[in-house]
Length: 288
Ligand code: ADP
Ligand code: MG
Image (cartoon, rainbow, N blue to C red):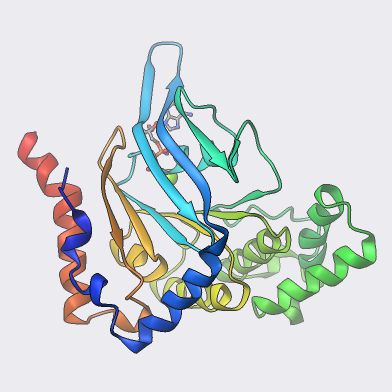
């Protein structure tokens, strides 16, 4: 464990850069609702016939309203399992998850997940139907209301012209935009994203990260985002929880609101990448 990981980023404290002040002020405004999601001493296990696999061990963190909170760690450290537990698909073997002070006991429309896979949209529904359908079922909206809200969020992700297209006619990036619009249209308390851009080519991935930040500026949702990419975590997140390799434990928690798409290649950004890499991998290698 690092004694005070936040000190790794000394410029966090100053917050003098005007480019970050806007985002910080906005995050503060959005966080007036306070603590939204609380994960306490959470351990998660898979029980197979032969053995028990411990996916995460004793994880604790808080997400505040308006946060872009990133779970970052190597493949297999339990990120997806953690996200599924927050979504209510997996029960804790120890510890607890609370949303707005209420214990999470199963899935709910207040937590919507966007996955990595491009095939998360039913192929027999058009784009607008894909977004409207869950609104009718879970939110009990009328057909007209659901359609209107679907078109609103489709426009937000720049796909208004594709409302009547079928998913198979769209590129991977466009399908992910539809999945994001569908999730946001549900107006969840927390939007959960599990490596949503990992299967995209590098350029599209960058573009999607940029669009996600622009959407956040506009809509101000609370995001819990999983990735194994250090660069993506720094760009997308305002706070990052670093998880150690299997089973995932909290290694450090960092602030990263000062970074954006423009930070790529900058010296301080590269230094942060190197520090996080060191935190994630070096201590474990030393032990092995
Ligand atoms: P990550 O998303 O960080 O790559 P996962 O949450 O998918 O990690 O997996 C964490 C650990 O749990 C891994 O060791 C993985 O093999 C194991 N695991 C994941 N899903 C299952 C399952 N359905 N049954 C048994 N073990 C699983
Ligand atoms: Mg995963």
